[in-house]
Amino acid sequence: MKKGFVQTENFRLLKEAEKIVARRGAREASLVIIQGKYGVGKSELTERWASENGHVFIRAKKVWTNRAMLEDIAAALGLSVRGMAKDVENRITAHLAVSMQALIIDEADYLADMSSASKLETIRDISDVTGTMVFLVGMENFPAIVQRYDHIASRVARIVQLHPLSLADVQATCKAKSDVQLTSALVEQIHRDCMGRMRLLLNAIANIEVWAEANDWAQVDVTHVKGKALCTDFTGHLVKRGGKT
Image (tube, rainbow, N blue to C red; front, side, top):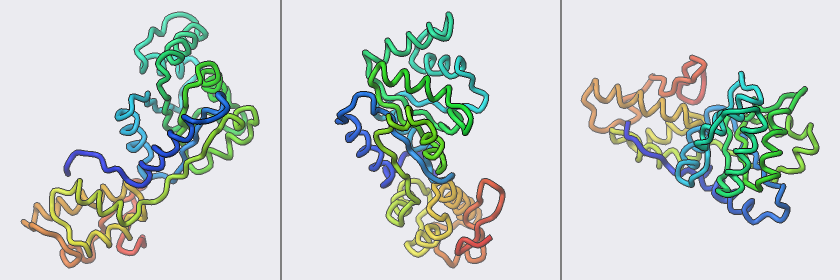
């Protein structure tokens, strides 16, 4: 499979949200929630977006304590992690107040739950002090968790809903990533079978490339893959034609 990144419609939604929040009225309204179903490509999308724009990308961890979170943020910024947690936080805020780099935190569901939002409150403090934008990438129910905490929810400037991939997105991805030529009919089948999920789309391309290499196919059509499961879901279930399992 070819390397590279495809700027899908979801990528354009992120860029639009960034422009809108950059022009916000209230300085403290600097949080953006990015939500979407599993498999739509949230992590790859936001990590690439961060690298292209000089933002700081961090993946939250279930085992994070408040201190561990601050250390990971500081390390990503190239800052010392010595001293007390407050010392580390002060270095982070001092740096961001000057650089104004946006923070993108993937797996943000780990920052809060129905009983505690201490890590999310620390992120809010950093954002309030520096005015830097913070993009929180989570699952579909993450906004509902944030809404339980009014003092944090009031800082959310925008919620970006990432959509399933369109046919145009799938066409562009197949053209950019596949090492073998795919007919338009096959691309349409892939679009149906992957159910708008980037993870399944990439699995389908990888599967087709293996079959093409094994059978010396220069071009692959629906007739070549009839009866084959194009997409393999990460749960281990095979997604067959028409999305049936």
